[in-house]
Image (cartoon, rainbow, N blue to C red):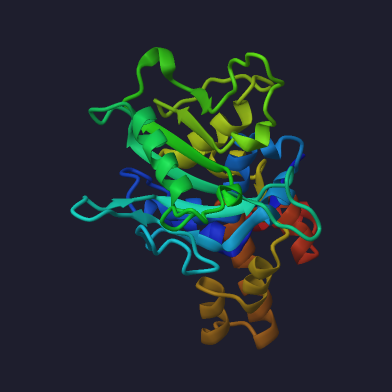
Length: 325
């Protein structure tokens, strides 16, 4: 099973964004997680075919993730790290990318040379805002590509351009016949007269992927093309249902997280209160009772199974089940 070890930050973001009603800035914060991005990239980026989610997560250049910086002509190469989330021209309305970052292109990188993919992730609540999403996506891609170079001069080296991806995740107002579908748009060499085909890397610079959801229930079949991505996004981008953590754990595993178990050991919430107030327990009994309460809460939230919880407490499953009852 291709699971990623989940972080506390990702778990917290999933809990905070459980309602996911409006796809507002707070709700989109879960998409900043490398674990979540790795699952999305695995299902949309052709360069990552055959790579595990853990490998893809390591490809992501963490310090390039941004959603606040400006892209202006002549000022696009002033920073070594930190991608630009805004583009603006004189007298032009400011436009914002939702989430932009870079990730390693394994097909073109070597031990000594890092070649990146420039990725723009755009979660959209409305698939039909009054214009074709596809046209807006291509415009964003063109601006993303041009922002890699400063103003063009006779000395401009266009060979420096790296490939850009625009990934659009559209949730609502998707026509019935298009629901739970994925479309890929890219530059292709369609005809040659009198010459051999040009090397693909010379023109393969923009790819747009449009993922359409459309309704809270997904009825795909395991093994269908796109199933893993569509199932994941269905769980993630709608208000969380009862089976949220059951499904999420097949992608991201939180049960072995060291930070989580440090929190259980240190205790918090009810467990800490039990220790501080003493109740009828001694200090050690209070500490053990606090750990038990924390584990029971994690089982109730489906972050842990009974088996995982019992193992962490060095307890028989039947004994833990009795505590649960």
